[in-house]
Image 1 (cartoon, rainbow, N blue to C red):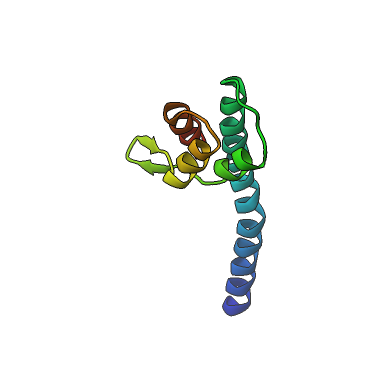
Image 2 (cartoon, rainbow, N blue to C red):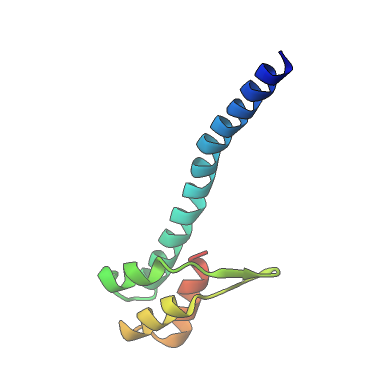
Length: 94
């Protein structure tokens, strides 16, 4: 009886985790991606495929700060965004 109850509780925990994790992870990721795109747009640049590709590179958290992903910054600079604005946009892509 204990084994059956243990298996059932483990199964329920796995199901709950598999449903809640994607829902929790999807919103912040897409919000950060959108924030990166919006920053570029608000800075007067066109948002095209190169900018979208760049904003897919996520920033990294270092203590209380977010650090821009260099791939994101380099791709935006290659798309003729200034380094400062590219860094600021990429920090938002966390």
